[in-house]
Image (tube, rainbow, N blue to C red; front, side, top):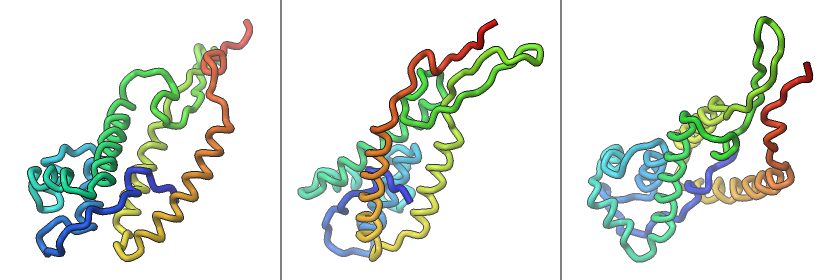
Length: 172
């Protein structure tokens, strides 16, 4: 299973408290940010305040947490922009070719972002979060890094579609 890069971070080492920023709460906070929540809403979803989230971000040793926060916010922004009209392939989502017909004749194809794939990715993240046990997190993260590296190498081998490939019009 692919785990996004922003979920592969080392939790900030903090003093153990039942009402503090445990590694599980840090992980759930980052997931809430990735789902589009602001810092106040995300902190509230784990039972803490926005101020403590920003204080945790400023602590020494919190560089990974801060980077994960920024990457999750960027991911949420890209997902929000997916519904707006943008050039195909710009958001890192899968591109599909949709046939266009006029009077029952094929007149061409239009490239569209596969929003269902984005929703499947978000659902996979949700399922992963539900099953995640903090004790097993390190093993899962190591496995996901290996899979991410393999997928990145595979993605580099596939050339991006050209403008001609995006808009195909059959000869008349």
